[in-house]
Length: 616
Ligand code: ATP
Ligand code: MG
Image 1 (cartoon, rainbow, N blue to C red):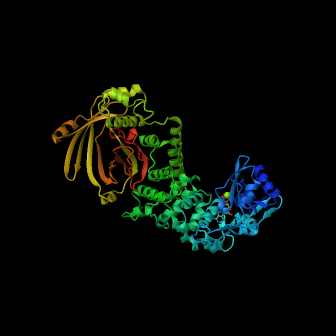
Image 2 (tube, rainbow, N blue to C red):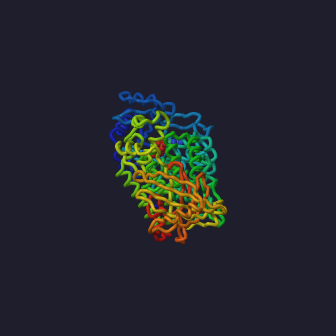
Image 3 (cartoon, rainbow, N blue to C red):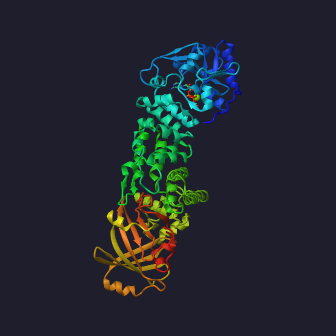
């Protein structure tokens, strides 16, 4: 670290000068101390001005008798004085007694010696005192350490850390915030006494952890000193050095997490989500036949672990819920133009979506040493589309839906659960862009039909999958031929012949479009004879579509891989969901080129007329 220019010309706020002059006028010493002096030397404005004095608490009360004082810290010598609208903490020079609980001195003793007071402080950069008339008092070389960017314990490190183990985490936090190198003996002391962190109150650990994570140099500090953190966060241990054996990843799980942290804005919720996002990977790891590593279900597992950690460290509920939701969703960002995306927004709100975008970016950025231009473009267009949507569309929710329960009751719906269900289906239709959010449109829609089809299928164009791998994982293979038949405008008719396990099934399907994009579907089994007769009514300009379908039950859903004869390098993957909020997973060995759920060109009826060129 290069030497810093330190400045000793401070201009102090008037309330601080007033307090110093009142103490001086009464015959006591008074100094600025701790973080305030450090920050002033660094040229930063301190967030508060801690002061230290030779006056005892009783003497202080007399000095500040014209001011309001608060004595909550009085047993340790701290009096809070309210001056000019500021709360100023002034502490009597103090010597800490012996420590038996690795945290609190058994007793404190007041002293008239500033030198003794500074000796009890943990790091040299926080053990300096300053007075505008007398200048800097710096018996431990804090100024030099500050200039050189070194974090050094005051006195003998192991003794200081065994007195109070919290200092170990404070040290990591300072190193992360300022980018300082931890001096060797200090670092050794921290590591030697790390186990005593187990005795520190969880709330204090939590505060220091968040401070450490949000520092500009969290990546470096965690890389060098993760062993210390593992005492309070043993969930990290399995990720350290855990090779991913996956072409998307250059790093092991922990290294990836560190890179992702650096790519993440220094916000507590976001950084916590990134720290936790892959904790479940080691438990979910397996290698396929080609030796490639996969982590099916890891987002769910990581979210469970994150929840446990945050409960243990006594995080507030809101933070815990925000973080675990981000962890849960991080692996499967839905395309912004989809209903899934709008649904996510509707349910969790805009702040969640913005957080989510930041976590997705950090995660992706942390995968490779260099983000490829293509990846970067993908991320940018994803973010742009999402931001555009947030800007231009109103956030829809049941509250903003143009109809409510009373409207449905007026239409004859029975009170109760059915109404809620119908309203959320209507919301879905609106979120999917198939229904306008006006009372008129929704009432017309409801009048037209008694049943709303729930179509929640997501379709992806993928790189040609490894068919042998699919079969090894238990996929069932069937051969499908479907022919589109003559039909009036707004109606699609098709017959299908599906051979599966040496058995052939014939079906006829009629889809009647109801509104913009909702349809009513009628599917029934027919005989071979009927099939052959119907197939003759083939729609002009179409050819029968043949495909091989691999059906794979995977994490609670059926994945249908359709391999068409006209493509060599690409195929289509469909996932049928009960509800578009149902989480689903795509195996890691499948390379998604893009989502085509809403792309008309990839509807089978369209493929029967015209086949798009390969993109793979
Ligand atoms: P920050 O900018 O985070 O407030 P700070 O150095 O002011 O940094 P504080 O926690 O406000 O830290 O504490 C003020 C001062 O009290 C420190 O600079 C340090 O000298 C001393 N101090 C605080 N906690 C401890 C501790 N656990 N052990 C020893 N000294 C401590
Ligand atoms: Mg402070």
